[in-house]
Image 1 (cartoon, rainbow, N blue to C red):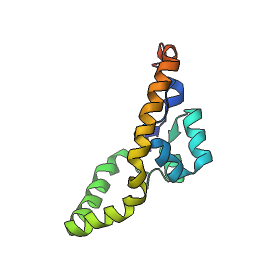
Image 2: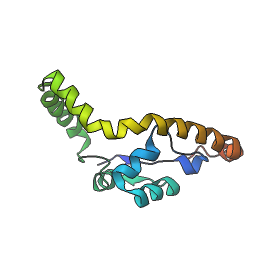
Image 3: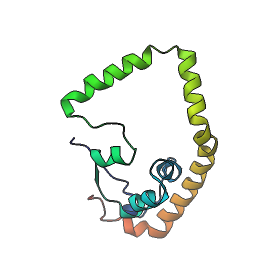
Length: 125
C-alpha cells in the first residue's frame, strides 16, 4: 500500500535498459508502456497491479508473511518441474532478450552522449 514506482529514464535523459523496452510493452501494452517511459511519473502499487506489473497489494506488515507463504509453496515443487515451468514460460521473452539488451546498451550510450548535459542537476525525482 505504501509502494510507488517509476521508470525515470526520460527525466534522466536516458533510454530504457535491462530489457525494459521489451518487457514493459509486453506486460502493459505498447501505448501504456510509452506513456510510462515518456511520462516518467510515479505510480502506485494499486496501479502496478491494475497494469499487471505486480500481482497483489498488501499492507507492509503483511508482506513478509505472504512472501514466505508463497516461497513455501514454490519450494515444495520438484526442482526439475520448477526448472521446466520457468523454461517454457520464459522462453518466448528470453529468446529475444539478449538481442534487446544489446540494442538498449548501444542506444543508452548514444543518449548519454547526446543528452549528457541534461543529466546535470536532475538528481531529484
